[in-house]
Length: 133
Image (cartoon, rainbow, N blue to C red):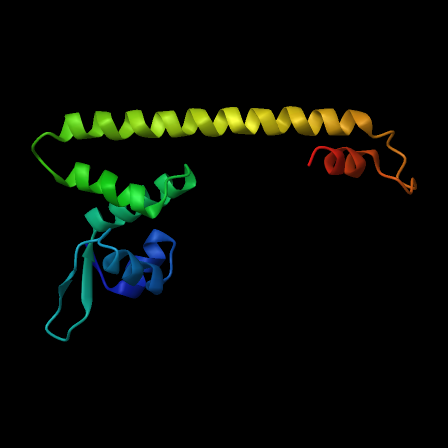
């Protein structure tokens, strides 16, 4: 099955400019063209855009996705490169989790300082934040 850019974008759930952007960023290969000059995309490219979108949902940047796709596209040393990529990303995610847990604890602490009286003029949460600067 092959698709022109509008059909392809619809099938992928993105707009045409996103497809063109992915091409400029080399996340997608330059597509083949019809005799009339229309871009033609295959079902493999649909899967690739689905992969890109899923990785974005999981918090990967387009730069990281580009690197990941570079690993996927290479036949040699694929596993070694993938292990290094995943290990580095795991460290980053662990740091983010620790940071989020610290933020959660700070918010819980601030919430406990509030008597839950919305009409108070002096807010204990704001006062605590000002004092901690």
